[in-house]
Length: 302
Image (cartoon, rainbow, N blue to C red; front, side, top):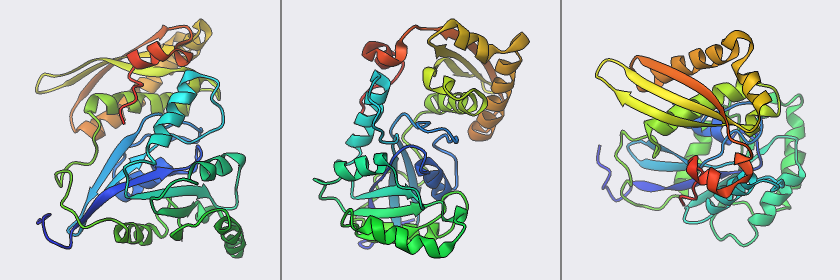
């Protein structure tokens, strides 16, 4: 595969928007592989994650970002907003994802942050598969068009894959002619260690009560291969003792179930047998402590 031909295009595409509009789902779908964790809860994505797709003609480096939100009470929220805001810079295309027929104050907040941006911005209207009346979409899009000078507007469904091919075609047209930045078999910039922590956090987010996922994080303490087995040990950090009890569950059943689901996904991702050990520990106030966040891997790496 020749990535040095004069027609080959390559560039960075930032996926931005408020929480829970489908940024991670869209990136995973176009890559054909799960790179970013997903759940129905807002603010599941906490870090900037690259997803790389290479074809004969183009290499698109998608930048998945945390949802931009108006709550900056805690250091964790401020970190996520900084990470999302930094993705406006040094990219070739910005894709603003919104949910069809649903516009919120946080969508207005994103538009406000785009006012001084010179990068081309494409509007992707997601979740069109959930529309009860397809004819309602056009007036909704017309209303949003007045808010910003979008270069293109693309209705799609990240979950079902509706019009994602059209989305990718439009994206490629805005990328510069360039050699590939990454090898053709690389799909992310993140380490296996990072991916293991994210898989565990996804299972926690999907299996716990509404507020608890925002008060926990995962730290990998051991990640080693012996040729036959991938040995992983992780600590789930929470902020209070009662949160620890909820995660462990009666007789440890909740933690065992979460560990089993995480291990199954890890074995699919890493293509080898996994031995996974989980512990739950308390670190009071970690989500509102800049030093604690840094020690747990929440580092401004842009």
